[in-house]
Image (cartoon, rainbow, N blue to C red; front, top):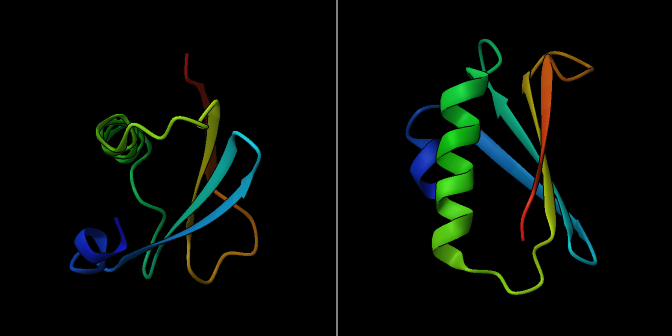
Length: 77
């Protein structure tokens, strides 16, 4: 993910606890757009087919911000 997004000035940091993943998506200038970012990440996670993945919470923020501008949680079957 980072390799693809780095070209757009976006970095993803991942934390995992059991089947729950947290992704912080940071952009240099402003927070990345929520809908296309979430859609792209979910599609990528589906392709990876991580057996232990139960849920993901995605946070979007600008690099200089101390708190996320948005967040979205998704459950996986």
